[in-house]
Image (cartoon, rainbow, N blue to C red; front, side, top):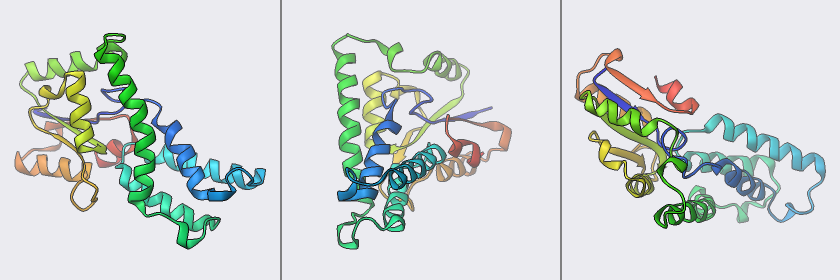
Length: 210
């Protein structure tokens, strides 16, 4: 092994732990619209189960792709009128606003010294990264989270400098970035064979791409 690609959220950092519990109600509210409070139990549970299933299957992919799927679900259920359906960027803005409130609170607690690095990273992850670097393995960070946020959060927790191969994240355009593109680029640029590249992640995306 000469190169290693790591996912960030849930693999190294836990700053965004609980994102599913934020995304789920955002999606359910988007699908039900004005009927969120008055929808009958059957419809509500159908929507909630569909959302939960999608979130479970999409862990690790870019947020913008998840929001594209949300737009399709809103249209599919047909509860919200066509003129009130937002685009993927509109839904992403709503979700990010709620999520970043949580993330920023955690970063502030870390900066104040109320919690330390071990509270916001997976146990053993940083030691593992440092060991790989010491062995001369080039490290890359590739996340489904927006790139500027991945950089900011990894810098805040102090491990950004370990990724000498670069930090990658969503650019708001799936044609310009995906984990698959990063992996293929590393393989091509370094003329690697399969066993020379390791990929670490906690979501189905990493398993599919490898």
